Image (cartoon, rainbow, N blue to C red; front, side):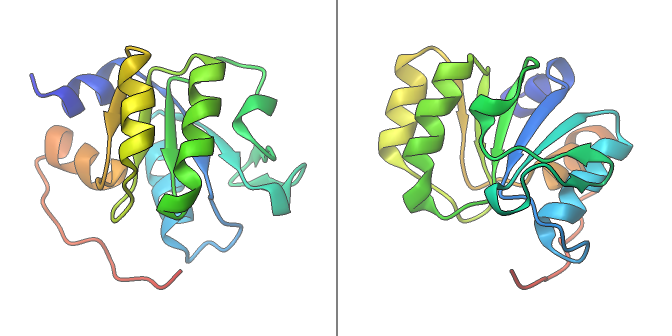
Length: 144
C-alpha cells in the first residue's frame, strides 16, 4: 500500500490551515470534498476565527484545537510552513501535508526528526480520488 493511501485510510481528522470563507477558493473546495468523504475538518484561518466554514468552527491556529488532529493540511505560502510544522509537532499530529506548490526543507527535517509523516506538493483531494476512486482528473484552475 502506498504511503499516501495508508495515510488517507488511517487518519480521518484534518486541520486545514489557510482554508478560505470563499466557497470558490481551492482550499474550500478541498475542505468540502474531504468532508463529503468522511473526514473531520478543522478549518484554521486567523482572519475568520470563531466563524464557521462549511459548518465547522474556525480556529486561529492549530494549537487552539482541543480535539486530536491526525493531518495538518497546509494551504499557505512555503515561507509560513516552518512555524506550522513546529505547531504540528506540538499538537502531536501524525502528518504534515503541504498542498501543491508548497515545500520547506527545514519543516521536512523537523517533522521527520519527530517521527512524523511529511508530504509536500500534493493535493489531498486529488490523492484521495487517485487512490480510492481511481479518478485522475485535473483540478479546476482557480485563483487564490
